[in-house]
Amino acid sequence: MEKSFTTRSLNIPFPKDDPHRALDMPIYESIAFDFASSEDIAANFRGELPAHVYSRTSNPTLEYFERKMKTLTGAHQALAVASGMAAITNTILSLCKTGDNIIAGNHLFGHTFALFSESLTNYGLQTRFVDTTKPEAVEALIDANTRLIYFETVTNPQLEIADIEALVALANKYHLVLMIDSTITPPVVLNSKKLGVHVEVMSTTKFISGGATSFGGVILDNGLYDWSNNPNTAAFAAKFGPDAFISKLRKNYYRNTGASMTAHTAHYQIMGLDMLELRVERCYNNCMVLGEFLQKHPKVVKVTYPGLPGTPGYELAVKQFSGKPGTVMTFDLESQEACFKFMNQLGIIRRATNLNDNKSLIIHPYSTIYIEFPEEERLAVGIRPSMMRLSVGIEGAADLMADIEQALAKI
Ligand SMILES: *Cc1c(COP(=O)(O)O)cnc(C)c1O
Picture 1 (cartoon, rainbow, N blue to C red):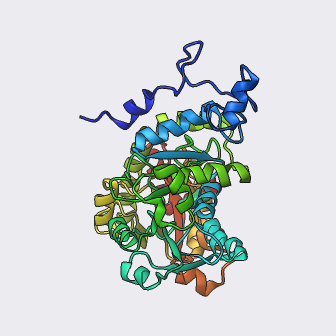
Picture 2: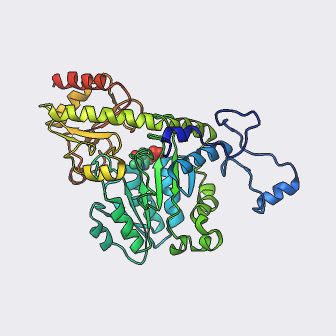
Picture 3: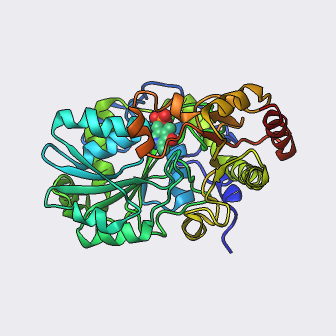
């Protein structure tokens, strides 16, 4: 029987022995590393003696965090970077070039949408946005210059879920890379390799960091894509075989864009990973208690959490995420005014952006995150004035429920 995620996380050996037999991976906050001889350093630069050289390129503490991510997920390779956005940017730049196009979900994290619709178009890289819950609509957009299909496992704040295996089948049919952003569904609830996903990226700033401790991102190559099929990785595939993507990332983009995670951050992320399963379980249980409570409350108009039976996406959540589709939910009151009044009365739940902090966080997306979009566009992407987004934390369920109850009583 496979050991639990937490047991496995706590028992992953360091890549190299520590001279003091430290029980926890030390924070190697050193920029450069010493070589025993000029012959050794020359051999390293020729690629014949693997070693840490300069921490922008690799670092022992980071290497351990990467090893943990790789071992826990079963991925072929893992690369840790400075943030979720760095993970997305480095991956896209490694797999696409000017003239290529990407097919992406039409409901994306705001800065990802801005990256695709503004920043990358400056370099002649086009993104075609589509409803990825409809594979036939995705297929209709594929042409000879399409390099990858990209979507988020649970969209935020719509909480829509696409059929991952259907999109994997489509990507395989056209030899495209299937790339997901799994931030909302961390590795304890999703094993992307089992579903056939080629590349998984995530913002570890959210769940994995241990509760808003630090910025981070991870890129996983599940080892399921033949890199000779992508014209932008084919030369690397000829030289590095299954390591083509990670080699291109490390040599061409990660190193050259300076998107590195610090050793100190890697230490936080390692600790967060060790406690990930506990926190996800706790937040999920809280979500279910709050979801059922809100569904019954007469002042609540609508509750959306695909962990609740009867909510759109519930069946896919059971199939893909063991019924635990992250721990973000939304609910509607009768108006924006009611939402504002309600939020002002909350004492334990904080009014803040960010997700998967240890603290429960609430926000009114229509008047904040989406304020730069015209009203029709907000409504078109499911951002209603009557809706709030709640990222459920690890507080006691009864305390959260009491906080919500007293605030609802005052509106
Ligand atoms: C937060 C987030 C990101 C960006 O991550 P950062 O670590 O803030 O750069 C990307 N995708 C999703 C789904 C997110 O929630």
